[in-house]
View (cartoon, rainbow, N blue to C red):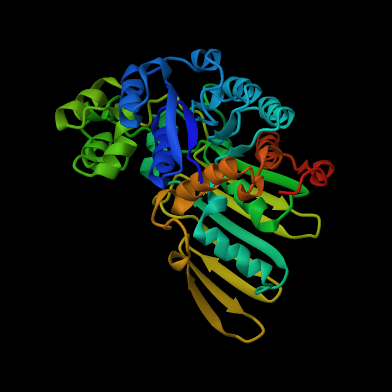
Length: 424
């Protein structure tokens, strides 16, 4: 299979990850980069051997150069996906777009329309569809091992320190500069749940709020920065403990530490925490996204699904319970416990034995598997290798926006008019 040439639009942590997976697979080659941050731009050019005349400070400069590659990875900040996606689609680039597809329904629809208009392949990074764990669940459902799927419980354990890093101090803390947390963090999960059911829900409701990471929850005596706070040693959200403990661990130095500073020394970390956003007290930030949320979905046949996203957990694999007419499955992101009501027997399925990328890798192997599927689809022209197209991703994003409308208006949102339009 020929190597697919790639333009990297946004060389942040997610963009780097997909580009590295493409190169490691041996089927992708990064030949151009557009990145406004000078250090990341230079580092990406050096790592991937990109010629100087294909290194750009802005995606508009890359687009002005014409089509330089077979495909582009769109990994800019969430609110900056639409313009490059539409224009690069018009130039004939196939697109791998980091989730969320866009931060509004109108913009996501414009991206989907551009993909359709130009006949290009577009894959949103719904990486949970691609894991060995997901393949195992889908196989059990297809084999009718638990009968008709009647009810699902699903938990996204965001993790107390991860929430503080990304959604209190970090880029995704505010809806006006990013998007609601359900979209930025959990469109993965809503898409995945729709994928399991194989259809869109008929109606959706939701509840949730910003409960803890607020000024009125600030402990007495807390300082505005962890580096100067007398309560820091016993605070669960200590930035000093989180980021200094990353030193010496290559994976944790890449993430989350590289989001804080490129100076991976004690002196460099403390300097960044003393002046940058990641050293702020979690009770004195400008965040407004929820720290917990529940979404409930009902399907046309009466099946139901409940999804919980919470900051107040360890950062672990998702937990899912599937309840069917003939059986029950309890999954922890790696193993599946299957109880057969007809025989009373129990079976444990270890999905680490599945073929393909390891469940120990990014998003349970989903990052690598999605990258490989996208590259193969571009190289062969076989769009079926990608598990969801632009229209399907738009449809599951619309469920997220419906859930947010339900949460903010205290209503149940009817989706039945959309259900026949797209098969997820």
